[in-house]
Length: 162
Image 1 (cartoon, rainbow, N blue to C red):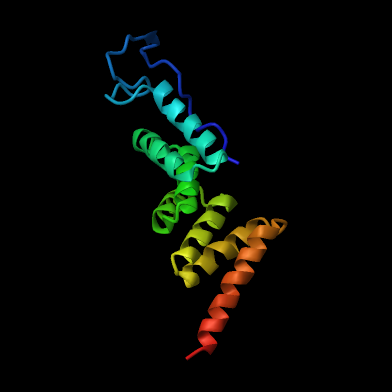
Image 2 (cartoon, rainbow, N blue to C red):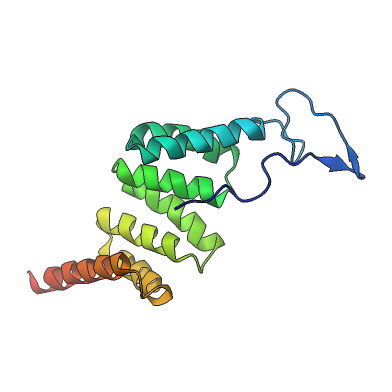
């Protein structure tokens, strides 16, 4: 579902076209001190493997490290949001999906994930909006339309019940 994190994980930093040696702990892309991009990629792949094996809590811990190191990585943030959702951390998952939606408003899966997370957190009105957008973008995705139908049914029931 997620692809390899956007951007190059191992591209060398060039200054004036020449390769510059990095100091210990220095990030290859921007010269900032932080985890080695190869280590961050290892955290991501480990997190994805754990998530694939059903170990969402362990995946969330590892993916949180990767997200802290690479906060702009859509793939890392999506994987973290999925792990958080699977561990019942719906508000945190919604926050991460929301970041993706804000950065990529046409990302149907991010709208779907945000809608599901909000629904599980009890925010059905907001959930319906994001799920409706996901369905509008990808009407062929049955699980999108099913989720929207369920949220709308919940809203209808709550309006009818005093």
